[in-house]
Image (cartoon, rainbow, N blue to C red; front, top):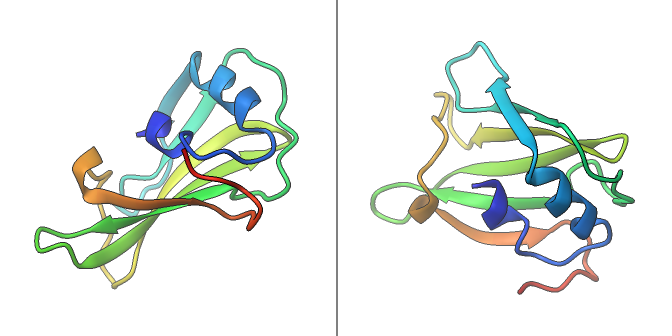
Length: 112
């Protein structure tokens, strides 16, 4: 899932891609959602402009938007992958085929 979000080009993405090679994940929330904390073991810090440099839409079985997938970066390091529901119920981490519209939050970024 992380690799899919890092297919978009934005300032600092190369460093995040390098960090992703050594990242370990741990449960990140106790509400029942699929949010995970990320702990990279290596790679240079990323010079990202936004704390959430990239996001995507999570869709349901019929293709309707049901949530967002948000990548968080703190102090230049991958820190969390949040599954944010559009409704009231928590969402599990979606399978890759339910993630669409990956986009950088920086309007000058270019998709691959």
